[in-house]
Image (tube, rainbow, N blue to C red):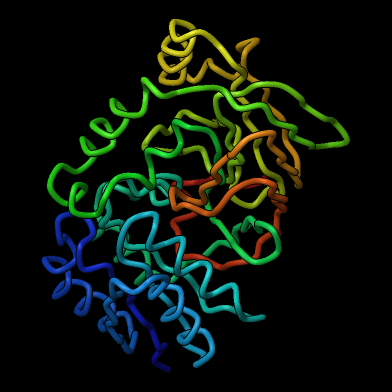
Length: 306
C-alpha cells in the first residue's frame, strides 16, 4: 500500500539546491512506493509550520523537510501539534544542516533520499520550550548564538557558510557576558556567562565536536554553560572544541539533565535549532522519543542509547 508523503521545501535554501534535486527525489520516492506531494514554503511567517501541521492533521504518513535547520525546526513544530505525528524525513539542502550531521548524512541529500526510501526509522527525543515551542537539535542563548538567526537567507544563498563568518566578525566586538540563573538537576548556577547550549545532538553550527556525549534518544539534554572569560581564553576554548576537549575546561559546565530553567537579569535571546525563539525566562524539557524519523541506524549507533 502506497504511503502518502509530503515534501515541504524551502525554495531559497542552499542556493536553490532542492530544485536540482527534485527529479531524483520524485523518482526515488515513487519507486519506494510513496505517493509524493510537493509543497513550497512561502515568505509568510511560520508558513512551513502551518503546512506541516496541516499535513499531520490530514494524516500523511510521512512529512519530509527539504531545507536547512530552520526548515526542519518549523516542520517539527508543525508535526508536534498533533498526538500521533507522521514520520519525519530530512533532506539536507540548507547551509549548515546540523541535525542531518547528527544523522550522518549532511553532505549528500541524494544519500538522505535513499535512506528515506529504505524506510528504516528511529524514535528521537524532542525539546519543548515554555509549553508552546519545540526543537529537535538544540536551544541556545548568548550574544554569539545570535549569529545563527541574524544572517539573511539571501546572504546564505550567496555566500553559504561564509555568511556566518561575516556576521560573526560584526558581532564579536559587541560580545558581552550576561548575568543569569540556570537551574538543572536541583542545582543552580548564578553568574555571568557568554553562552549556553541545551543539546540533543553533537552538532551545532557545523561543529560536530561541540557535544560528543549527546544521544538522540537518551531522554536527556546535554547542558553546556560557557562562563565569562577573557577574549584570549575564548579563542583557546574555540580551538579546543575542534579537539573535543572543551568539556574538561574549568570555564565550561557540562551536565546531563531532562529539564533546564533559564532566567536573566538582562535581555537574553533564546534560539531553537538556529531560529530566534524569544527572550528568557524559559523552561526547557525533554519529550522522550516523541518523533519517528528516517535514519540508517548502523551509521548512528554511537549516538543512540544502548
